[in-house]
Length: 457
Image 1 (cartoon, rainbow, N blue to C red):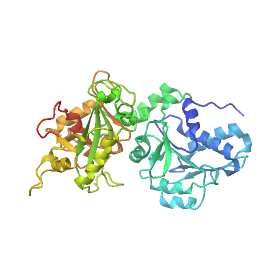
Image 2 (spheres, rainbow, N blue to C red):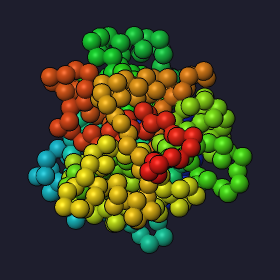
Image 3 (cartoon, rainbow, N blue to C red):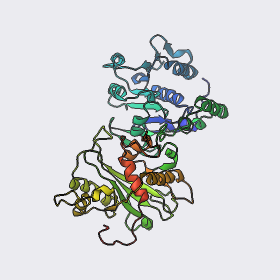
Image 4 (cartoon, helix red, strand yellow):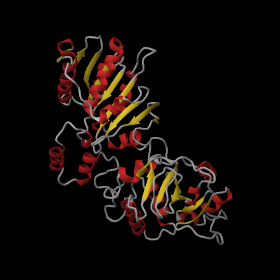
């Protein structure tokens, strides 16, 4: 048997405990498919005749490269003892393990897997699936003996048709390599990113040149392929200023009492909605010190550390229809977790009198113990420019930047992908779900009063 060499990335992936499913989400050339082959080999060796592995691609044509890869790896390990049936796309290992290379493109394709059981499910190029419903259905085939763990490993590059649902489910949940709960599968996952720079077995300079030649007029796609950046959205309003590695930060732990980091200022930034979603961010403003995550933030930087978003499940544009008292309770609970007063800035429209002696929405909030002052948002273009500049300046030691914790899911599901207004290129298209962007814009424009006067709070 020839000696096998692993990259640091592959070694790290293979060391992830089996109770976690894995999303291999990174740029091109990161050796994700090879890593899947190694995971299959490890599973086959560990569970032998109990191991039933299914590898899936959208088309049979896409299987050919992986088929050659398995021939290389399994042949190196087993020689002629491992047999491959090319017509059935099935590997049979000398220890009794079984691996099938399959295709899944349409609902009718699923019929060939109906009622069958697998212990390891590998889905490669998952971004080719614009909708995850077929892959969700396939997961029901994961079944094994009581004493044997089942597992799913998915791989994808950013920028493909399934970019949005993959980013929503697996990327903006927790820091890379840290477990998180995924609602759809009811499982814990780990996001394991890589780029071509993590692959020591390729000519890095040559591969870089190939990628540049592949998308000479699409800089956002090139960045996604080179850096594995899931915050890209080609042609979107914020596409040139928002990047996952620069603007996404690990979730903060809740603020301890009497911490020296209480020198930070905390306030709410709120965009009201009922039939449309309402979004409230908890914003932390840096005095020029470390945050609760141990990361240094330059003076006046803003970090969105938590959110309350009332979008209907499965929809980014429909609200839950919450009344002010119900919404205020959600906001107060968030403020209580962070040990801050529930006060901040809100959309100017919240302060308009509703007529018939009802007062304003802000008045209703005040009665429930949530206090807002007007954003005085003025010119939208000015607000967007401030927000864009702060996104661009994130990471600079001498300029205030805008950072968003990965647990602010509604932000990451919507803001990076908002389009431009076709009639005003300097504005966001209001037909899209712009509620998180609006709340963030109010927070960027807000300067907290040093003294509370009149009816400010």
